[in-house]
Length: 445
Image (cartoon, rainbow, N blue to C red):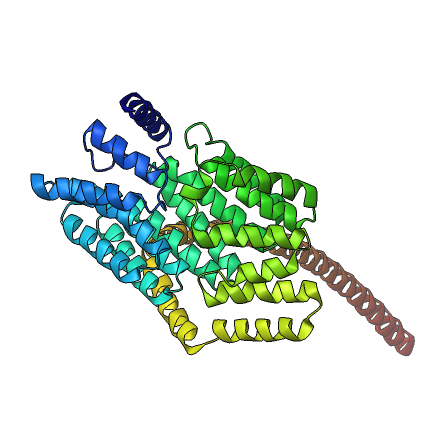
């Protein structure tokens, strides 16, 4: 028995060390403690984890070691969620936040745990509380310049937008989360983000994009054993939506045989997949009964209206879809939308400031370039004007020269005419004198 436990512990440790995206020794505890914790995380929804969680917490109390207490609390929270013990889940999250409030060196564990809590809030329909938690996380991450915290914040906002069927906005926020994930050098969180992006693209009918994100997540299989299960579940829904029934059935059968399936998925996730399988088999009455086991009204209505439509019971389908729309359009959801709008504005302030700085720099460059262009245009205009002025002066000189030549020619002509007239006058005068002389001689003769 002891040998078997050692083998299991060694296997758990090797899987955890190979899967940093899901299980990381963020609290820097000793190897044996981390092995126990990691084994529990690999089956996070298993009720047996409550025993392990209690054991770690009690050890922490006895030793005065807050790290052990945090490990125990983080193991307890998922089980409280699947058991519907939300008050216990809330108190667990609150205690973790209290224990780690002043520990800046342990922010990665703090943010990841708070993110998990927010996910449970979203899944249980407690949107306003998820918004407040995400807002607090983003503020702290911005204040302390922790991109990992901003990554988790945008991931939660993506989940909230998805819950509201705003899948385009969900994709935008998840892509921001990917960007901050790279900035934080937390690539171990990328496969889960890729799975979420695949699911959102699937909901929008973007099958090639969904399949591409599945492939990108699958690349981390060697380092993240649990990612294969998530990829297969996403692919199963893709096959179903594309009408590839046989591929869906084969994938479903492989999923339910996976030893990680029960430990790493909650009841609603498994129930939803079972309903999809029963509908594909034409077992509609069984699917309808299965839908009643879903934990939230919204989930039940979403599945029931589709099942009723498959049955041809269109009155019931209409009634289910009407109730679903009322659920979505309730005052509660509208208030949440206002909260989300505030949160979006706050979370984007830093990004807007960065964008404003970039825009300011671009404007300064644009102004400089504009000034240079205007200077070049003005300089060119001056050169053109000077050239035109020179051309005009040359033209004026040419015209003046021609006019002067013409004036001189005219003057010369006038002088010649005047000389000719003077000559003719003298000639006439001489002729007149001669005539008078001849006349006087005639009279005297």
